[in-house]
Length: 398
Image (cartoon, rainbow, N blue to C red):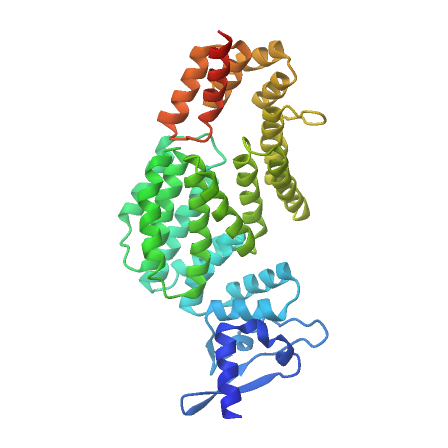
């Protein structure tokens, strides 16, 4: 019995997926730790096959909460519905009193899109005297502020502001160091200065190896893979970008994260395979509709789908509420006049819109300017191929 109990404790900590059958029949398991008996209280709802999450005693040893990572593993192993499990873990996060779990829950809530709950958890961490919790809370407040500002027209001073706030923080622990470097990456991504991502990606990778909390390591690893997708995509290194993209799709349980990755994967197949691109568009749209995530639905329908469809000349039944993509679709149908008219109404043109207009007019100077802007302003080798390919066609004609 002693040996069996020891084995069960190890399984609880590392391989909780094996515990489902056992926990269906017991409500309390005595597990030895060292020479003393300690009680792990794990109560199952025998009718629902799920675990109650409204009582912290359900996840405790001698009144001390289990780390969030172990709670995560247990609930996932004992709940057949993945999304139900995620909501149960969210509820546990909101009721936890452990300082460690309060910190770790910030990343869980952010990663799974529980942003309202994240705001509550930031406030809870700020109210704790522990300076580590307060520092984490300030970092996640920067993340929240950044997300809210993204809805507004881009302004360089926005990233300047939160970079200054980052510099003012006294970063000491490895998790905060890692999170700070992710924020640097996001700042340069917003600025479209993709060439600067590599430095911080290298630092994040080194720090990841030093993290001790399995939950933070797992969630930050998914974040890191997403950085790698973007970094290699923008450098037009698509084999590497796709490797990281597929790894995220096979790893993350966050449906919103899956939408983001499918959307990026769709765009990444622009030049190689219309069928693969549309597959990822449809997957992203299906998930977005299933969870009624309207911003993603509108974004895919008005930007990703028409952009890929127009580039490949497959426009039947495809439309967009965006004026530039309307112009792109008109161009794909051979209606250059409408394309030029729609783009001429815009006050300023993005590199994409210069490409559309340059292609409609067969204007080498516009195409060259579009190419230079993609390369110099954005370090975007992938989308720089759009005007470059068209320039080659125009030059052959002339």
